[in-house]
Length: 378
Image (cartoon, rainbow, N blue to C red; front, side):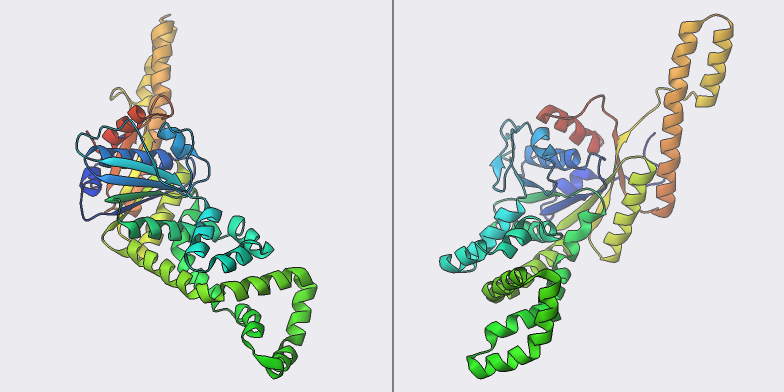
């Protein structure tokens, strides 16, 4: 199968090498080769002279494998072995949401206050396991990388499934959390000065506190209140930085690339991503259709099957077996073609780049170069 003939081709190199593009975000469902695609894009850009950082938010550590590295952490690590004749470079890192949260706290408060926050049980849980923290910290990390201006291009590999776009909602969710009634109530005791203030607050919050204590326990409530009191002066900065990163993602400097395979579930998810990005007016570059099978000839599955039956009846078993294999492959190709055409019918203006299925997984730079060459249509 090839790209639907009426679909515009995605010119990958024009995106990678455009000095006006500083961020590329790869998104898609799980198991579609999104991490490999992100690494291949980053490597190709670096070997064409750009200074590139590739950030994975996916905790599965596949990016390190693709780049031939033993492991990645929260700090950029130089990838060795790239062709740097054009003056490019490649650094890679994997988001550690707790370390990123810790770094933010250290950068925006005193050492004593930071120690108080780090020791708070609610902070420990929030920074390491709460739903939504990973996506918000991804926004923080991307903002940090962009702010230091060390790289010409940052390639972001997002988590699998629809949660890959949750980081787009992080500023709004954080704002709702910080501006919510419960947070305001929890910060009131710390802001109420003197005994009179304490009595007024106590009277107003007595019933509320008793209900919360029954629901979550006295110690948890105390931990949350202590955490909010310690973090209160930082909340505005969190919201402002997240919003600034969100605005960065909406600028022409950014290009979103949706990655899918020619399978029903993957293309259904791809349609969701496309619709969501367009609804949010995000700069969408196009679709990478990955692991596409191609037929070796123009012989259809039906004709190959018929010829195999004829040859088998004549005793030519080897030739019949070859034709049956061809028929099975042709059926796969025909099914993928129908799915691609269906996606095109729903998104007729979407540029598409097709990457053929490889005989094995990619685990080194040579493999990534092959993927990059296919992405660029070379």
